[in-house]
Image (cartoon, rainbow, N blue to C red; front, side):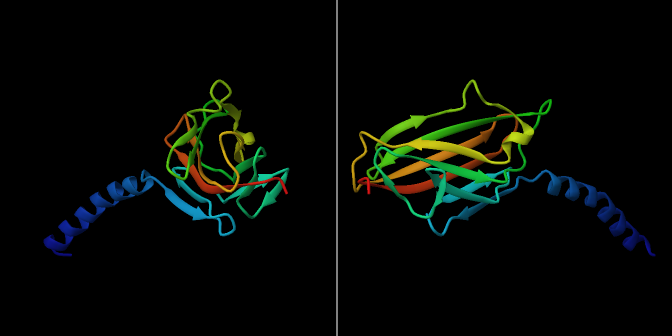
Length: 168
């Protein structure tokens, strides 16, 4: 091996650990869209296998919600929450806006004061969304739910457009 090739080899040998370190510390992110509901889920430094909407303890595949009913947005198989002493800390914000962008409800942390969970309890993260006044029948509303890892820098954001209907 001549001196020139040896220098290239040394340079590669020195750069490889740096590149490996950068690759391991890169942020992971992704997104998914539920084909049935149109819900868009984006995540950063956490992983989610799927996101569903439940009403009356059943998964629904539509976004027509009877006015006055509640529904649940649930992220399944959540992985990557930072742990301290066997616990994780999660925040949950909720924003509801009308079709003109007017905010009807903004809750920055629904879990505040009750945000510590055993690691085993966080296989899924869910938020109950209540509907009612000032919402109106046959109007659409943008619902945004964001879960944040309070011990880390991960987040999951769920966005869905719902339509208020009269009770069937």
